[in-house]
Length: 237
Length: 237
Image 1 (tube, helix red, strand yellow):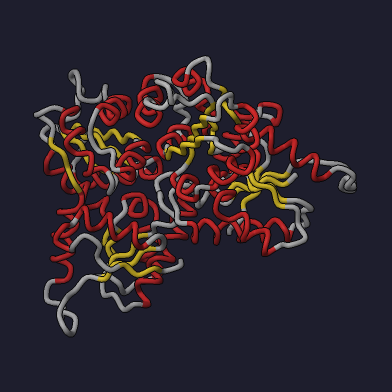
Image 2: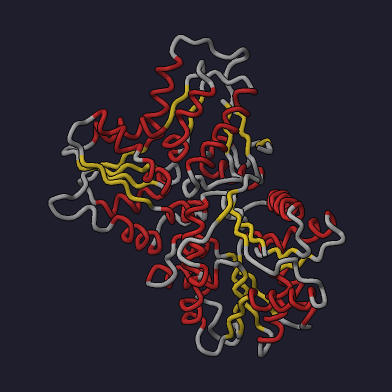
């Protein structure tokens, strides 16, 4: 498994579709040159706006985005079809979640809310406490009250699961939180079923476009099984 | 006057010195090709880490940074030399303010505090109110109390003057706020004294590396004299 983090040019969520597409296609080209046999676009904004451009550029490569997986999860988890998506500006503007959920569940009411500060909070490691609570109320406070209250909250940006405890508290016990990661992993397993394993077995190679030591420390914290500072390669995109 | 905003790759404040230098030198090259006769690095992080690299690459071009100007302002404004600098992670890590202030004022006590969320708040237009107050308290709450209380607060990132009212309230009436912009402009006027004006007189050309319409709206809000949506050119760096 190759993991490429475009740390130098993140966040993608505030950029135009044109620039996100340009960066995402560059990243895909870099990985295709390394010989990958499938690509997961593990960023909601890039999945929302650049998936078609990547698929067009590499017509023979299986390309999976996280938006389809999140939409799948929401369509299944929502009791009454009142779905709130917390996402970036770019993802909301694209209306990718609205379209993907409508294909799976007729009559669903989808409200996509741009929550750009959540990205900065997660990046800084400020994932719970009074500041997170007040920012969460600022964006989502009115959406889980009354007869139109959401019954499902999609964490529509890869950063947001880090804030899940605070968001669950705000949404209340009757609201299901949907994380795109597990659904995406299952989808990938199905797509790769029957394909040959790489010679020499699996493995993980981490690549970052900036500050590999800082990236290694963050990965070490999120995935303790990899050790405190796993090896990270630097790539200039 | 040419103004280049590297909107596509901002923020610079969380990136490594290597990447900030690479991007800043690219931006300088782009502007030098346009025939500029002086360069203001109007970003604290790039001023803190990339000024020498730019000056080395263009030895005959006058290159001014905002850190020197901010340090100048602080050294003059501070009553007792207890200076607090609110800045990005990159600017604080570089210790550029500590060095620049020490050259101007012996015995000054400089505390540089990384305030990354201020950038996200300013970018989102959330410049005052309870969320800004609580984030400001989170970063700076303890620095303006007691015998070691700061007597001067440097707004050490070009975004931070947008939060000035909230920061002034937190710091209290006895603390002087230092904005680098005016000091930088005066410095530039002195450096260019006696130089010829461009043929045809002055003018302003705005260039952005992403989303020129969004950039134009933001400029129009900050500088109403330019009209609601001034013309902005797109450049791919």
